[in-house]
Image 1 (cartoon, rainbow, N blue to C red):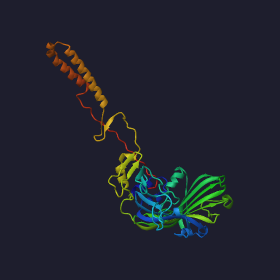
Image 2: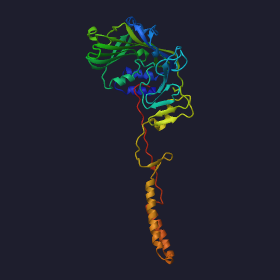
Image 3: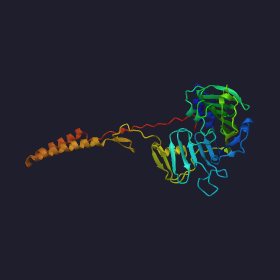
Image 4: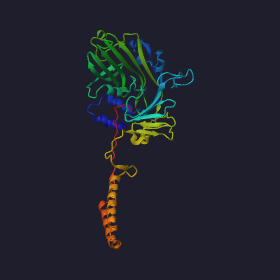
Length: 428
């Protein structure tokens, strides 16, 4: 897989830091546990640059936004389990004993390689595993979900592939980085995303700024800002760097054009309000991944479902890889297609076509002809029957031969086609 990505990168006319980021992500073969929380902080944390270094805060947390999870990658597929955390910091049930109930959506399990994704809720009584021939951001939490959406899937969703952007250099918190700026809109209403990639950690982003401004919106002249700060990245045995600890700060800036009349990309900015919303991600217990990534939270009597149909897991497997899921679903994984020859019956086992309507028409014609011959013979005198019977039988045999009933139709080869969705750039 790594070799294929390298070849694809070398074949591009404009390989950039995003391609290097993709290559790093595909080289990760590791697993770890993580926690994610959302809370409020005083803006002094931003002023003092503490979001670059602190991994945990004494912040006012939002209870239903405290998430626990597990993430692993085998270099091809990525596996995520995440859900609301209980008091112990583990994924808690939505129903249970008093004091152990957590708020929010039920836990989710996702397995994806960018081409096929399998996901389901981890909830008692829910036995449906949905499988779709695509990738994307199916969960909101994980090491690469910096704005509650997978990166760089977010780039592909928001910005056209043809959008021009240049690569420049900058020093971010003492690190020499290469950054790309994506821009949509005009000076009166725009969305600007600046991603600063650090070559020292295989082009993981060291810092990201997303800034939205609308001069005539419901809150005129206000800018909405989200900033990503990479605190710690660790290298796994396979060579890939993993963002193990990071923070995201979200805040507003009133009277943006008055406060920053000549604003340029990466200019220092600060929130006007005292409280700042902060996302805090912390990974722990990092270890190497030596086996395939699989779904592991499968209930008994579960079903694999896709738009082409469902398959019942009668053997109640404890785990399933994407290869196993593909094999079990077979042609049901893709959309059903109209047959090339819809009027023909076919045999799946022999993979040959037959045409029963054409055969029946031949038999009917032969029977009518045979009946006419018999009728003519019996109208003759019995004494002449012996004289005319042999020629009649010869005529019947000739008729059957001409209609083709004495021969077997040659089989028609079965036509088949398969389609494979192309992987999106790097969400797998």
